[in-house]
Structure formats: C-alpha cells, structure tokens
Image 1 (tube, rainbow, N blue to C red):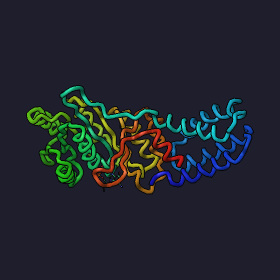
Image 2: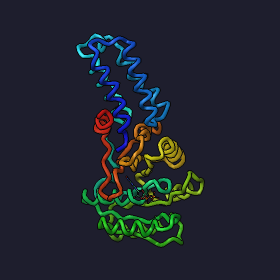
Image 3: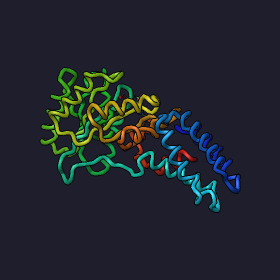
Image 4: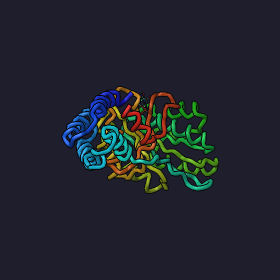
Length: 297
Ligand code: GDP
C-alpha cells in the first residue's frame, strides 16, 4: 500500500514528541523538519510541503499548545487536521443532474493511467445507485481499448456503445447521446482517448467533444505511480480543458503516494475516488479524513 514508508517515518517523529513532557519551540521545529523530509521523500510537491509545514508550525508553536497538558499529542492532532485540509476536507461526489435528467461524464487521462478500467468501475458504482449508465467507446487511439471496455462493461452488466475505430470521437459521442435518449440511459460515460504524453491533438479532441456535447463532469484519471508527473498532468488538463475532479489509480501499488497529497492543493480540484487494484470493485470513495488516518497509521 502507498504511504507505508511515510507512515513509518511520521510515527517515529511522533513517538519522539510524545515521549517529551514539555516541548520547546526548538523541539517542534526539529520535529517539523523531519515531517518535511518525510513528505518530500513521499514525493509530495515541494511547494505543498512548504506551505503545509508553515501552517502546522504557526499553529503548533503558539502558547496554548506549548503550555498545554499534552503538547506532543496536540502537535500530532494539528498535523492530522492540516493533512485533512490539504486533501480538501470534504468528500466530493460525482455531481449527477437532478431527477431523471441525463448526466454526461467525460473521462480523460494519459494512456495507461487506468482510464478505461476506471470508467467501468464507475459504471458499476452508478448502477448500484440505481442509475442506467451507458459506456461510450471514444478511445479510438489505443489498440484494444474498445474491446477492453466491452469486456468490462459486460462484467458490470452495463451497456457499451461503440462505432469501431474509424469515426471521430466527437461523432461517436454525439451518436451515443441519441442512443442514450432512445434507451433511457440517465448517465453517459465517455471513455476518451489518451496519449503517452500531454499532446495538443488529444486536448483538441477533448475540447471538440465539449463543444458539441454538453458534458456535466470532466473527470481526470491519473496514475499514482507517476508521482509528481501525475500532479503536472492534472494541472495541464485543468488549464486546457477544465476538470471537475480527479481519480488517482494504483494507490494499492508500491508507490510513494505523494500525488494523492498534492493534487488538491496544486489544482484546486478534489480527488473523487482512488483506485486500489485491478478488479472492477477496487475503487474507493476518497475520504480526506480516512486517508489522513491511514497515513498517520
Ligand atoms: P488506460 O490506457 O488509461 O485506459 O488504462 P487501462 O484502464 O487499460 O489500465 C492500465 C493498466 O492499469 C491495466 O493493467 C489495469 O488493470 C491497471 N490498473 C488500473 N487501475 C488500477 C489500480 O487502481 N490498481 C492497479 N494495481 N492497477 C490498475
């Protein structure tokens, strides 16, 4: 699981803090220096770490904390609260249109991030909520993406709309909207094409879809294993096409996890879900408080 090493390091810092009866300002500063190192080693964005440590320090060296009954415990509590704040505090849901109105969700992301898998995972969640999703194969770029969506859609018991590889994604999306209207699908999820790197053609493809189809939610899928690249990718997508939320995949893997801690602060956009495995059930709602508890161990 991600964060194992971060958790171990933070626990060492905290053990030290707890063992002291009183804390001097110097004790707190020293501890926070170690917290800073641990976060940087976990691949959290440098600016984010700086801001985080500054915020904790401002709250922790105040007289109330230093003269309190249990100053070590107080500092740990502040770290916990600031971690939660860093990740956005509240759990954010995918915003569905009210009533029976159709919600269009556009999934975006680089190739290999886990977009097609995550698209099917989300369809399963929405089906459990009583929705009737339609998955749309707009990834005409990656070989086998269409087949993969069909296989996963079938596993989830969700219909997949495809027109093969020889149509423009925007035209597939438009045709899918007509299909959804006829078939009573109240959520349409567009699985768009990624590329290996950020590329103009990909952004234009996404923009074109947005110009011709009313997209209600644009969700970006990023791979936690790519560390700070995932954060830069999120920033780029947000600036170029505008995103509503992010899904961070592969947090089950041996990743340092820093992306999950940086994305909200860098992009201002919430993490909606995290991918915790290859199975279609391995998608977890993102709870900042639970993630903070997990990190602190
Ligand atoms: P796409 O190119 O973005 O559509 O990526 P895919 O959906 O094909 O996923 C790429 C690979 O990542 C596949 O082997 C998936 O099984 C795997 N994958 C996706 N999400 C997760 C996850 O949360 N954890 C793990 N361990 N693997 C994942």
